[in-house]
Length: 413
Figure (cartoon, rainbow, N blue to C red):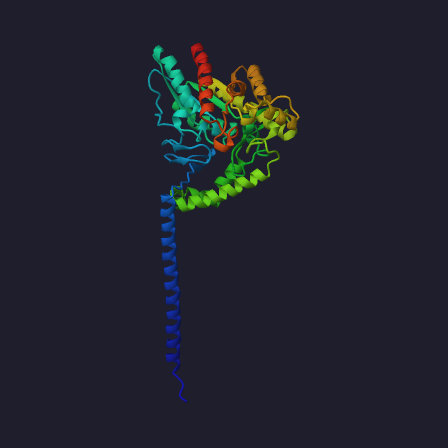
């Protein structure tokens, strides 16, 4: 038998290998096309079904994270509102850096209670406050312009950084700091906070506040952060913010994470993010330090506002259990904590204001009076009435109370 020449055998093997590669490439191409079509159909289906996913946050070198400029979409995780973030990253209408003539500018600093994604813009407490003040001050020839710098998850530390980095360029006449005792005290401590991201903190050392941005710097120097800041990273962020399929995946992930945290909650009465230890004097050194840093941050902010010739007001926000209209529910919760009042943080911050000579408006006590008198929930929506953030009634009352106090302070100027 005659054998094939070596070169003919080699050509045959090469041709066979090339054919196999073509089959693999053809199958891979068909898979990619099929997958792309499936994604496209899923995207269309989710849009037709009305599914939306809105994540208005971006990473920030100074603040850890903040609101994404020009982001807009429906917020439905709690309450329901169409949200627009302005071009400078504020949950607000557009504002010029230059203050208009005959205008009193009021800057509001705070966390998610000030951000107020749960209600439409005109229903927020700072919009109510602006309208109420405008009615009173217009006769004096003054316009009122309120600027909202609230961002969900912010601590007093990040609010001080926000004041320094962004607020002063608007030249406000008044700075209102909304303190949310339910989580602000804890969030001012890198030990107690529930956030795992690299964020800035302050520590109190040798009689002075010192910025500790080690975690933030480590994150900013990481490969992932540099990738997020690169053109491909920003392109991916653009796609992620608009894709319904990716939004569904993020929704499932967030829901699982939220349920895991809820299962770890110590008490059914505790709200997510609220620690019962806030209602009593510090239980250990970590809480003592968290309170000390918080108080020093507020005083530092008072000093910086005063140096600019502006008026400073601290307001403390309520949480749901504090203003629960059912006395029995409140009494049972206090018994479980072993406390006789749910206003420990309000009393402590009020005493701080008296010692350091700045004005404090505690909203929880008048909120409780209003809730009991009218048998109404000022927090929560739907099945979660009484828990979570202020609803429209809560924002309305907060806006009225703040306007009343600010009118008194502006009359003193």
